[in-house]
Amino acid sequence: MSKILVTGGTGYIGSHTVVELMEEGFEVVIIDNLSNSELEVLDGITAITGKEPHFEKVDLRDRELVIKVFEKHPDIQSIIHFAAFKAVGESVDKPLAYYENNLLSLIHLLEAMKQFKIAHLVFSSSCTVYGEPDSLPVDESAPIKKANSPYGNTKQICEEILQDTLESSPELGVISLRYFNPIGAHPSSKIGELPIGVPNNLVPFVTQTAAGIRERLNVFGDNYNTPDGSAVRDYINVVDLARAHIVAIRRLLANKQKTAFEVFNLGTGKGYSVLEIIHAFEKATGQKINFKVVDRREGDVEQVYADTAYANRELGWKAEKGIEETLLSAWNWEKNTRSKKNRS
Ligand code: NAD
Ligand code: UFG
Image (tube, rainbow, N blue to C red; front, side, top):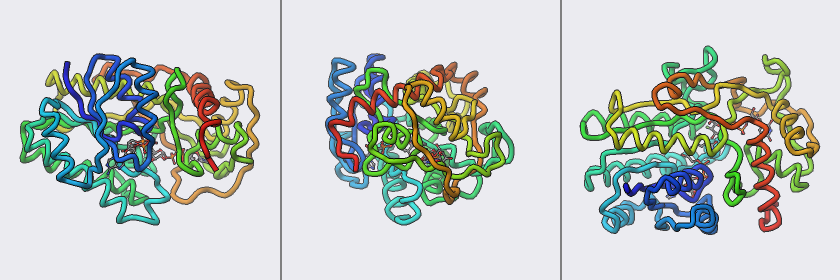
C-alpha cells in the first residue's frame, strides 16, 4: 500500500486525516514540529486505528532535516501538506513569522518532491482566499480577492507558488482543497481540536463555555445583513473533511486529474449563523450557553458558504454529517479532554 507523508499530522485536521488514511490501509509518515500540537495525539491515533504512524519531529523550515526524512523514507509516494500557522489575528501581529513558516515549508517540500521524484501533493487551502464573496454560494471560479490578513495572503501565495511550479514540472499533480469551517471531533472522542490558550474559533469557545472554562461567549456582531444579524459560515465536520483527502490522494494516484492544478471547495453548502450554532449546540447537548452580543470582530466577512456541486460531482464526495451530530462530537471531545488540560 502507498506510503503517504502527512505534514502537520498531529494537528487538528491532520490527525483526523491520518486516521482515515490508516483505516484505508495507507502507511503514514507524519512530519510535525509540535508547534501547535502535542505528541500524545499519536496515542489517540494508535488507539483508534490499532497501528502507529511513523513520526518525525521536524521543522519544515529546516531544509536539511526535511531532506533527511525523504532519505529515511524513499518510498513516500504522495504528500498531504497541512503544516502551517493558521491564526488570522496572530498573523496580523506577526506577519513575517507567517510568511516564513507557511511559504518556506511549502518551498522545502516542493524542492524535496523534485529531488525525490514525488509527483503528488494535496494542499490545505482556505475559503479565506475568496474574501467577502460577490455572490453566494461560492464556487471555485469566484475571484480571489485581496486577502484581509497575512495568513490569508500566505494561502493565496502558496497557491500561486504551486501553479508556477507546475508550469516547469509537468510531472507534478496538485490538488488544492479550500476548506470552509472545519469543526467537531472524531466520534471516538480520542482525537479532536486542541486549541492552545484562549480559542479564536467559535466552536471551541462554545464547548469551553459549556464546560465552565470560559465564563461567557462573545457573539461578534448581530447587525450583519443576514436573517438573524449574526455572521454566517459553512461548518463542515472534520471527519467528512478528512475523508475528502483520501479521495484526493486516490485521484492523484490514479492520474484522474483534469488539469495539473485542481481546486475544490470543501464545505456542506449550507450556511449557519453564529446564533444558529449556539442554539443547535444547546439542542444537541442539553447545555446552556452564556453569551452576549458584542461589536463585530475586525476582518470578519459577513457570510460565506460553499457551492459544493463541483467537489460532489468530480470527487464523488459529499459532506454527510449534520450540524447537531457534529456539535455533539465537539462537546464529547471537550468532556473527554477538559479534565486533562490546562486551558486557562
Ligand atoms: P493545526 O495548527 O491544528 O495543525 C497544523 C500542524 O502543523 C500543527 O500540528 C503544527 O505543530 C504543525 N506545524 C506548523 N508549522 C510547522 C512547521 N514549520 N514544521 C512542522 N510542523 C509544523 O491546524 P489545522 O486546523 O489542523 O489546519 C491544518 C491546515 O488547514 C493549515 O494549513 C490551515 O491553514 C488549513 N486550514 C485550517 C482551517 C481551520 O479552520 N482549522 C481552515 C482552512 C484551512
Ligand atoms: N465568532 C464569535 N465569537 C467567538 C468566535 C467566533 O461570534 O468567540 C464568530 C466569528 O465572528 C465568525 C464565526 O463565529 O462570524 C466563525 O468564526 P471562526 O473564528 O470560528 O472562523 P472564521 O470563519 O473566522 O475563520 C476560520 C479559520 C480560518 C479559516 C476560515 C475559513 O479560523 O483559519 O475559517 O476556512 F481560514
